[in-house]
Length: 206
Image (tube, one colour):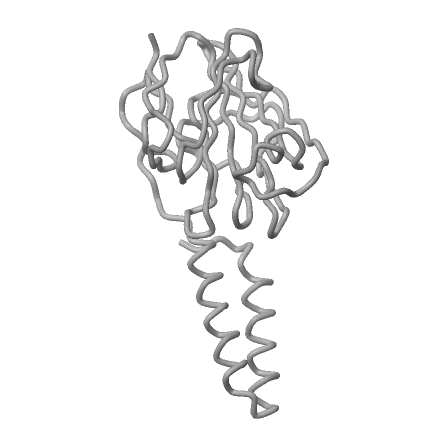
C-alpha cells in the first residue's frame, strides 16, 4: 500500500519531468522520474501483524534504536524509561501504536529542524507528543521532525482508542520517534537494534 500523502510529491515530479522533456533536457526528465520512484518507495505502508502476546509493547517506528534513557535524563515522567528510534529515509515512516490504549493528550511543540539523530534535535526540534492511557500506566510517544521535510503528522485525536500496531501518524523523511514506558514494563531492546513498527517487541509487562 502507498500512502495518499505521496500524491503532491509525485505530481510535482511528473510535472517537472514533462517540462524538462519538452525542453529536450532528457537527463533531467529521467532524474525527475527516478525521484518519483523514490517517493513511491518512501511512502510505502506495508501491512503489519503485531505479536499475539497481550503483555508486549511493540515499536512505534521502523529504524534503529539510538538511545535508551532513564527519566532523569529525558522528557519522560519520573520513573519512566525512554527509547529513541532513528528512521533513515529508507525506512517505512508510518508510526504505529505501541500498546492498546486511549489517546489521552496530544501536544504539538514548535521548534527547530536539526538532523534527527543529533542530541540537539532531541531537545529543540519540532515535535508532536501523544500520551496513550493504558491499563498499566500512560505510554508517551513523541514524533520528532527532521531536517529535510520538517513535517510530522498525527492522524488521531484525543479520546480515540488505539489498538496495538494501529497506524496513528507518520513523519516525512529522516526523523525519529521517542517512546516513554512506565516501570511496569521491562525493556527488551538495546542500542543499535533494528526495529519494525507494529512488529518488534521493545518491552514486556513485568
